[in-house]
Image (cartoon, rainbow, N blue to C red):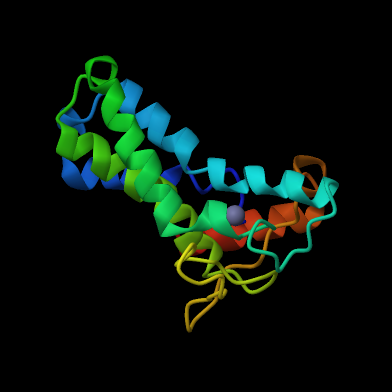
Length: 156
Ligand SMILES: [Zn+2]
């Protein structure tokens, strides 16, 4: 991952690009949570799934396919979000997909399985200026974590 602090910035940027007044606060909070959800896959380490496996870290949960599913399922909550379907899909899809985009800009770990389930191949962007974040909040709250956060905030 990039850090759990910078991922939620992406849907917030999207909301302001669309026009903040068109996006309900509920939708913005949901999209911010969605931007962190792909890293739920770190529990796969506990089950012994190898990093490079399609169900390992940065695998299927970081794919555009899953982002699309989250975008589509979110449409069921239209009355709760109180926004247009177009805006709900845009925020939830881009919010989730932005996670993989940020991760693909990091300089370590494994690439991102953007095109799962069509291929499990892992991708990075050609430039990777973001220092990879240590996994887990306890590791994050260290000097190295601080330098990672600094590199992200500086760039993003
Ligand atoms: Zn990640």
